Image (cartoon, rainbow, N blue to C red):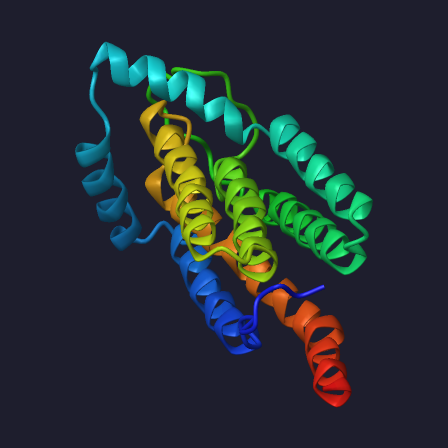
Length: 221
């Protein structure tokens, strides 16, 4: 089922571009580049403050990116898609999330970057790069953006939902920096990784489901 008349084209080339960007970024982080050090300091100086209202918001909102929360949200999306017999989209969602989070675990243990040494405002364990909250939220809400483009007919609701979905990973990434459990470069790397898997996953979906559907529809017209 494709409700939009103009589904996004194949995203393989953008996906490859993001793979390259991510590889370069991960190499810079793992090598302790001065550029990354300067980037982290500059962003921290802009983002972080001691405003009680901001601290309270960040400590609460950051929980929306917890692995357990993202997993539950993913399962809900998966089940809803199955109920409405959108099997290809359900497996697209599951595949992107499994690959993104699995790869994230591998990279964390390959780079083994320690978390910021300043006092953490929330509990966090494990390695720092890339931010799992940023990877998970970018992947899930990136998938939701794709599904919204494909399934929502109303231009108003499509635009509104895309804006909402895009804001979630941005805000979750912001809170991870604010509560001092990640460097900005961890968050940026997580966003890149999550988007990369969405682009590569959509390319697969496009070639094996959307494009054949569109060809079939044209033949029947």
